[in-house]
Image (cartoon, rainbow, N blue to C red; front, side):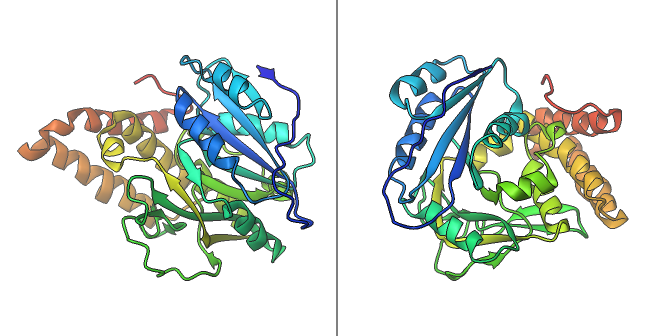
Amino acid sequence: MNVSPILSTTNHDLNLPMPRVGIVILNWNRRQETLDCLASLGRLEYPDYEIVVVDNGSEDGSAAAIAERQPAVTLIQAQSNLGFAVGNNLGLEYLRRTRAGYFLLLNNDTEVAPDFLLRLVQAAEADPRVGAVGPTIYYDDRPEMIWSAGGLIDWQRGLTEMVGLGQVDGGQFGMEPRPVDFVTGCALLARMSVLEQVGLLEPRFFAYYEEAEWCVRVTKSGFRVLHVPAAKIWHKIAIEEREASPPVHYYMTRNRLLFLRMTRAGWRAWLNTLLLDYGQRVISWTLRPRWRTKVPQRRAMLRGIVDYYRGQFGPARL
């Protein structure tokens, strides 16, 4: 692992005593998306922040391009793809040694409104009981359509879901910060003091569910989690690709079970997840002719269930 020297990326002086924010961006073979995200951050209207890019063993020249074009960015280079949880934990461990008052986890396939970070920090600073906040996240190719306005957990069914998914923003979530069960790791701002209290992201997840489980720890520690409607970013995500991806089905299947175990969900959540959700889906994908194209996804789901009960977590060879 190679860590470059600390360099400040302080931009416009707003003459406000705002705390320093350490922004952690994870990259894996997405050079141009990461460069675009960094260019977007260069327009932030916030007085004190630094950016840490964790490169997860990319093979597309990402690290060299970032170092050349964004020399003020702290670059941490891992030797392999460590996944979302461990990769971000590297950045968080680094920020622990700095004077950051907050950290922001930000996906590299996002672009941000110039005032989004200021609005997030202001919402958190307004109440010491706030542990984590997140913005409204829109689809990049449909900039008025919401991908996430925070997240909810249905403890009866063992489900996590994005609030506002697929809705056109018509102001239905107002302008004031509002409580939610979790905010997605696509853009999650939290106090460093909260991190010290509840710990890092759980490495066993590798990818998916880690931020929801982390936010559950935050709320169980007595803090609030808020969605800040006025803070806005745009996410370059294609739902169709995720739905067709066997690796996504694998991790979502396995990690949902790990999430239920770690959060001590009740028996109804387990019953719904294993029988009414997983069981019915596997049967449907097996017997119905219209779903015979789902064979790779079905196999990924079944392997995810088996690996959970075998205690095989982290990255999987699919």
